[in-house]
Image 1 (cartoon, rainbow, N blue to C red):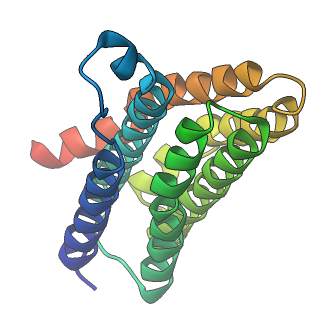
Image 2 (image 1 turned 180 degrees about the vertical axis):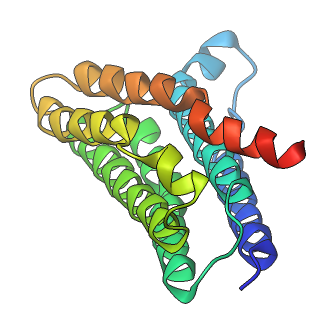
Length: 193
């Protein structure tokens, strides 16, 4: 099965997710700096989620560029990932509107954890489908995924102690994934030669 429709559909869904998030940013009712300052938590949660969704799109794009074919299993694994990403605007808005209160930060972390699990399942499905190929070898033991899952699992209960600790762990996971997997990059570059 060709991968073009999967890529186009995923790109469209991710674009809609980002659009929904930006539409949640409401214009302040006043004209003073203080009126704008009240939106700082909302804006910060938007920026954090925008970057997260961007990192997912970037890594998803790279992984699919290194894939030759897909299967029905991969289609469903991709839908699973898109489902969890589609919840990001909701938890982003709730967290920002409530100044990073405990329960919204916990739910935000749970959505990020589930998206990470879904991404891991998609990566494993691609590696299994492309067994004995460069992609399966490149994905190998995915330490970035394991570290991310561990950080999310730690961050969720930490929100009950102090939400800043959870946010810090969420940001660290973002930094880990900011640069796409170098092993996958090498495969993409080898296809271009």
